[in-house]
Image (tube, rainbow, N blue to C red; front, side, top):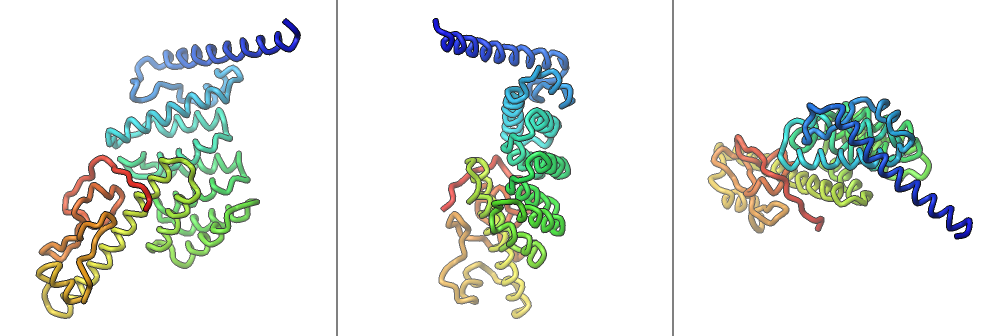
Length: 308
């Protein structure tokens, strides 16, 4: 065996020992909290303590904890859970171990920010996570985009959204639409066109299938919300003009000289209720809509569609 072969064997042995050491370390960390449940993804709550205990294998430990984070969120999201108590700490541990794990920030923000059951309902923790990511990856313009997105979609804080998009637009090689988004926040924040532009940008620039699917569902929801808003405005105008509500969707179609009954993104006709409300036929097909659902409606498990 020559020197090069010996070096290869030694390196392989070290790698194997390192992997075994990390597995044993992780088991040891789990035993420290025997009262925790598997559902809560066993871990030590202090990121600094985990980092010290990782024995220098920070990158490998970060991957392990990131995998646990995804599994934890996926399990609770599938169960339509309203609590994600372990999510933020798991993300903090992951990013402390590896501050350059970009996917942990991008997915982490989308896990943390939305209201349950679609997320943890912690936009403040999502903002902290993204600012930590920007601090350690200041030249990644997509992190600014994700942060501005949280301000816009979850907090309706258009001023801070505009400021973050503006910051991101000054990063080298930033996408040109960052400047456009900053301007849109100031001039047209909150309208359907701006929301559609944001989610379209997310779809076009995401490589992960889950993020793209999420964008598709939001784009479908935006169309429904806009359709329902416009149709109910027409119903109101009909009532103001005639002194009564239209007796049916057919009467409204005839009054407006439409070619047919308006349909949702799936091609199903919108319904007109006796109270003048517009509803979709299958609200479970649009998990993010805010309009067009019957009174007392509770969403079922999310369904995903491909972008047409």
